[in-house]
Image 1: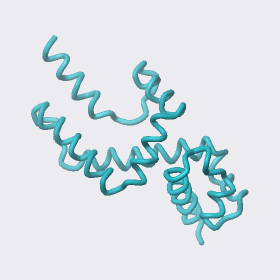
Image 2 (image 1 turned 90 degrees about the vertical axis):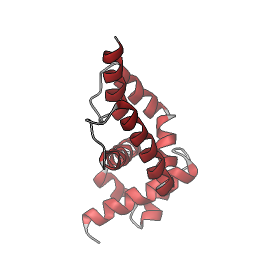
Image 3 (image 1 turned 135 degrees about the vertical axis):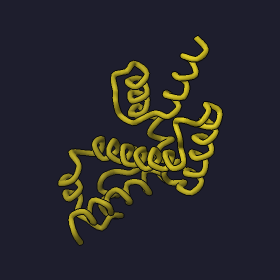
Length: 143
């Protein structure tokens, strides 16, 4: 098994276990066991559980954002862009229910609350929020 394979197995195991059992119900030893690696191996790839949780969210958000960009055109009317994003989010999560479960848990945990706060206050440049750009443009038009 190559190093990237081990990392991918750890991420897959963490996704499945956290989606099913939550952050606290999926200890590192359980993740390591499911991934087929030693518990210490996880720490070669991640500083700790919080780092694993944050990296998992960033990867899933990146996949979702890439999916949203398929067929998205900033030149389309606001209504069309809004409908595109909404429908794409639904399609993505229907096709990837574990991603939905993980991201829902993340966004309703202290991790997600801090991320949302930082984004609202402009203190985080993580992720390109389609809705933010759509709403800002609409707000400028109506002001």
